[in-house]
Image 1 (cartoon, rainbow, N blue to C red):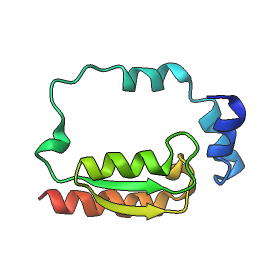
Image 2 (cartoon, rainbow, N blue to C red):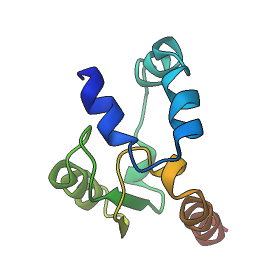
Image 3 (cartoon, rainbow, N blue to C red):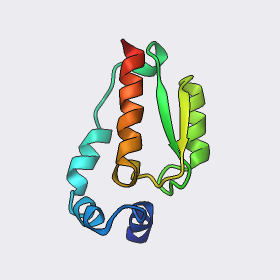
Image 4 (cartoon, rainbow, N blue to C red):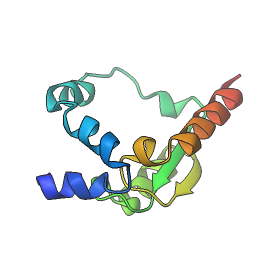
Length: 103
């Protein structure tokens, strides 16, 4: 992704948060998506999905496809890809609701 795309996708976060995010480091992120999985948890566990409608890294159309395929309970939010930076309270509420459903 071009640098301007990454900046745009966290543009609705406060400046201090944007700087920290920019310095986070790509190495850490790459490792998270290179792990080999043996099964997909979404096939037999309840799934929730927070669809970010202003996302420029994973399009809302693609997100909707993946959420539908996983039979996820969908929550839409008017946010960029970096929703945890710009809407932390909503993300916490979303995670707490998902955890409560899993009990």
